[in-house]
Length: 371
Length: 180
Image 1 (cartoon, chains in turn blue, red):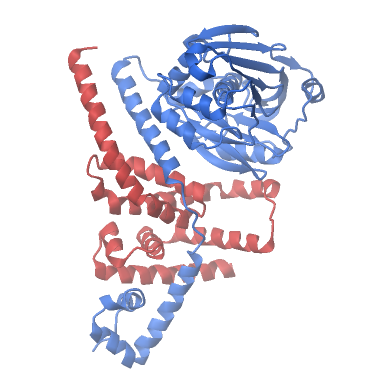
Image 2 (cartoon, rainbow over the protein chains, first blue to last red; image 1 turned 90 degrees about the vertical axis):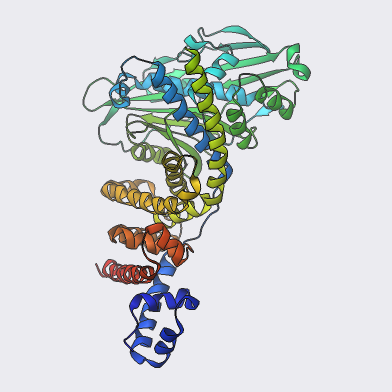
């Protein structure tokens, strides 16, 4: 009988019952085939050792929630394409026209909006210890802004005035701040005025120049007071305090004047409630008409909202959970990885945002120096 | 908006809902193995989950309403997509080296050794022929010869040969890495 092919010898170790007896008998009697089998087994063992990294169990519920959201976005995009006859501008072509500050403002407003919603789910205090992503579709953004009474025109600009109030279906929302965002002369002045420690990266990615300005956003607060239509919540209120924040804005080395990188630092936001329980408020908010059920489910999947700051993930963005200096963070990037941002809270209870017209690795490299 | 269009949209929504239920069942049956395959290649859970998400979204579009046909496909796609990630990483390697000097803090010697071994494996995997690498990863993630044959579209009798060549190449490449 001819010697046994390598492939059969290989299978003999994995699935011996699938190999015909005559082959097995031959190997037992043939020194050459036995030696080849032993050599093959050594290679198999090496491969097994190399490929046997510890396997962590993935969270299928969370993964499914994200996939379903992605599919929903795709359907919405198809619907948009069907009805919008205006020429479509590619994301790459459109992006540079959006200034970094506008991007950071959108991010900050998103955090405040989501933070307010999260704050309203707290019993007495909201003190997040880490961040977690919440995917938002265009429909969710519209639903949240309508629900919070912000209106379409305010979505990108935040609240229309430094102080004011708005009536919504379930009560009133009051906001106030100790001033508007303004530039200051130096890092020391910014840190002194805000009263927060601010670190900046020692090494910058290629294309990023010096800091072109420091901006301080004074402390701001938003109070939601529930009326009688909110059932058992009627009369109670929740106040979210955020800031002060310092933003360092970096210029491009090309001298275009367009900021390429922003580094923002602020204490973690906090919220106080006058007495409603977390479960009461969470159940109320998530069951409101207009709040998409998928969004409600995703918020529920976050877990204990008292310790989690939801980071809104806009449609089309990719999101990853990362570690920055050992602390959990959320990394967002556009589809082309031409712009990215990372948000995390460190062990000193400071919230950091690093964002720029850079790929996600460059953004993470900057973040790692601060973490 | 015309009545016909509204009708079409409602039908589409209804189709989407029923299709989604079937797709969810398929997803839950195969998600873990897909993540495991991808994790074996890319080396970290988060990266593997990103690969899995990409693969399942592609499967949803490629096999509308007939997801059971996609069981083998998602496995192959997971390995190939993960290998693509590795090949993308190679382009960034030079920059990564500069970054590591700033940001990585080795915590213990064994961790460093382990990390280096994983990096070595990834370098070798991306040099292996695609089908060999796929067969290797599939087998060492527990897939049977029949499953591998179905997934790769080869005869069952050829799987052993593929594996043998892949493992032999893996050993030679690892030797080369060690001595280079």
